[in-house]
Amino acid sequence: MLINKNAQMGEKRPQHELIARCGVKRMEQVQVFAPRGHAETSAAASQHRAEKITVSVDADLLQCCVCSGPLTTPLFQCTKGHISCSECCTDGGMNDECECLMCREPETATRCRAMERVLAGLSMPCAFRQHGCAETIAYASKQLHEASCGYAPCHCPIPGCVGYAGNARSSLSDHVMVDHHDVHHTRVRPGCLTPLRMRAFEQARLLLLGHGHRLAEFLLVVGRDVPSGRSLSLVGLMGEEFEDCKYRIEVVGKNGVLALSGQATRVQRLARPYQAGAFLFVPDAVWESFQLDTPVFIHLK
Ligand SMILES: [Zn+2]
Ligand SMILES: [Zn+2]
Ligand SMILES: [Zn+2]
Ligand SMILES: [Zn+2]
Image (tube, rainbow, N blue to C red; front, side, top):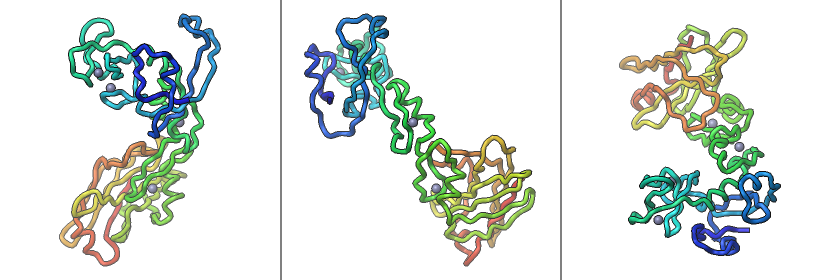
């Protein structure tokens, strides 16, 4: 069953007109709790055992007309049927009254309680279902769930990598180990300046630091996001169980030493594209001036 995109919820149309074919846009699979019977009080409705049906709706039907964000209650509509979220309604007075930002006409928008009731009855699969999340979530909790869903796609700091499908178990460290066989590993002793002998084309180097009985992993990222040079930055691929670690990166050029020191940030998963908190800018003229190994040194402790 499909709900018509053009249906204007506020108009006094018979219910069956709202349920009609719609276009071929992005569709959301939603489940609707459809109470049997008509004018039930909310108390009676909550006791009622609702029947669940599955429908497909255009995704933009669940978006605010003004900001295109997800519809969140309270909802408002103008007499032309624009439905907007509470953020996009100008507060025009007392009670539920406000002005429609789509029309920009001096008319009063009112609460769209019919659509609020529809939203309250919706549940839908997590957007990361194809990555393995089997959750079906109430519409109102969808954003909250997806922001912290363990199956959300994760980003990777290695240049050119499109990231990986997150799942509840895989960390960035696992991803680097499993999917980046071309990344060289270097064992680093705490407090020792270690030469890395990086190749001009290398995009990252995995550093393994002896830390008690365990090895702490760090990724030295050679970013290409700065013009006419490289951005060298360090990410700690570990959780809170490891102590904070200070680092120093040095690149020894023919005319001097470029260096950056700081405290490594710890990352287990990247929910957003990687942006180094601090990086060492190495001009192309320096990076490419070495035929074989670029003299990069690392100091970790
Ligand atoms: Zn809005
Ligand atoms: Zn309007
Ligand atoms: Zn999920
Ligand atoms: Zn990657």
